[in-house]
Length: 449
Image 1: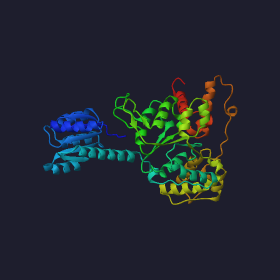
Image 2: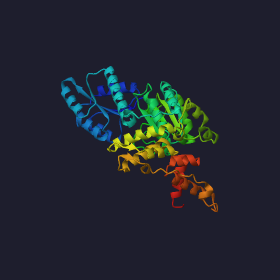
Image 3: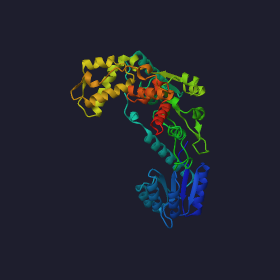
Image 4: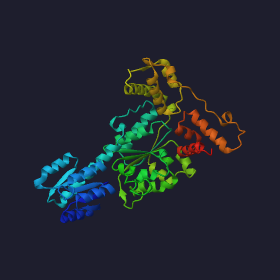
């Protein structure tokens, strides 16, 4: 798989243009030709290219002019300069202006292939760096005091060495993404990127393009070629977060891409081959989703080769205080605060709370306490923790309402209020997807409602 597909060749000598054309076509590249700098600049202004190969000296506009225009329009594009031996100093000048490499006439087919390989390796590094997340460069601490978490970490060490798909289940906020990161960091793919896709955050119309990329003009607004997450994750790991939120209509295509490790971009015809390790997560009951015909059974079994279930924080209370102290150190450092401690009463309150939002909620509470507390220790009242009673439908909603739609609306809005507008947690409690909840809220905000 390569991102160098469309190349602009610029040279006023027919024999060199033809030689480059034949060499690049043999490598299955799309090639456009320009006989001078003026024509090249016009093409650059109309079309997008992955690579420009241009002669240094030409009538009308020079290779430096082409280089400057290409870099202005596409700052990260690679430009290779062709120069005669006697004009190497001009090539050095071009390199100073941002050229990637230069070829000295006469050059061989092997020289072209070597240059193309260098460009593709450079592009791969750019893609990886663009998508590397903070947690790859700054290790995240995993607290494991409970027997359950200790076993999970032992399993992670074994699982990481495999290329098999992993399915991580657990309530929202339990740390599924942290475990996925740890699997990647311990794997043989750790030098390649871990690319993450939050399936719940993508609209039905854009999710296919996010996965597989698209070609220029494939739909309204597609102004240029775009690489999808599958291409960006090549040689690395792709994390499909909240996999159950993927529309049923896209699941067959996703299954094929995972099984065959190949796909086509939206609007494209060329099959792209990749080498990816897949990790999927969900906070929902997959077997229930399958029974309700919202998730394909064959896709589930393809992803559920190595299952991991993370228990909620209320079932591993041994980790509440160690996690709290970790968050306290981290957020004091990040907010440039003097190191704080937890008072005895604060520790007791932390242990008594049920943590419906799990580790994520604990982290949020500690960060807020660090920011707002003015003393050297965090006190119980600084935590602002109140156990919330789950309201029932009968307690909270008058059953005299005339329509089911009104009852549904009140139940949804009240559940959101009870859980601090946390859509993921509210959707889980209501037994609907985050996408369904988002659509319902959009409907409630419409003028007709």
